[in-house]
Image 1: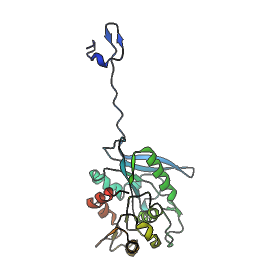
Image 2: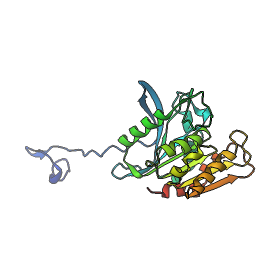
Image 3: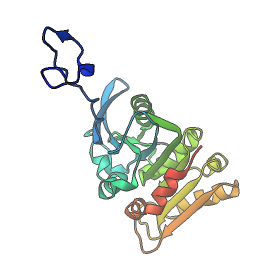
Image 4: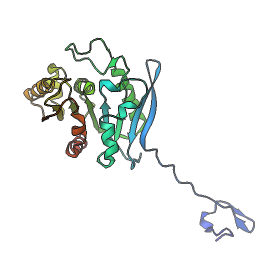
Length: 255
């Protein structure tokens, strides 16, 4: 032992009559929780949120859920999309979500994707915001490319059907909630496991929009589950994201 009480094997430099005191530094723990992020889209800074689970360790790969919010959470604050739907479910039961969650925000004048049916044609597509946020998240975190999932509610339910079909090779599974899409995408979507939720009494997005998509995927031989929630209006997302079995199912899917 040196005069400071440190074993000689830990002393980096011997000096006359003793040794230099060495304080070992532990690697900084990764920042976890709901993390504010900034990206650049079309030359403009855009805020978004990434949830990083408490046990995150970048030495191994992690599943990633991409969440698309509804029309009411559009804007530029970069935060309110994390308060409704999946973000709320994560805060209420974080142990159900041993994964990264990406939550981009669509601009006020935007719509996630066009579905070719005339819905919200006056809005600009916000697809580039999904693209950029996903690319930045894949670059920053150790994501398992075989376990990337897409889900969304209302406007984000439309986005899940449409963006999911456009990027079927990216996602391991889809969970669209109270949305709709293009039935012509049925054959492409049939390549993916899908679990659909919709309130039977939805007064905002007709339940027929989910029914017709489910039938299109089934007709193409797809693996699709459909949960039509009785006595439920537009907010079917709290039941869907609060369903532990549904979240476990989503995170169990692999490409």
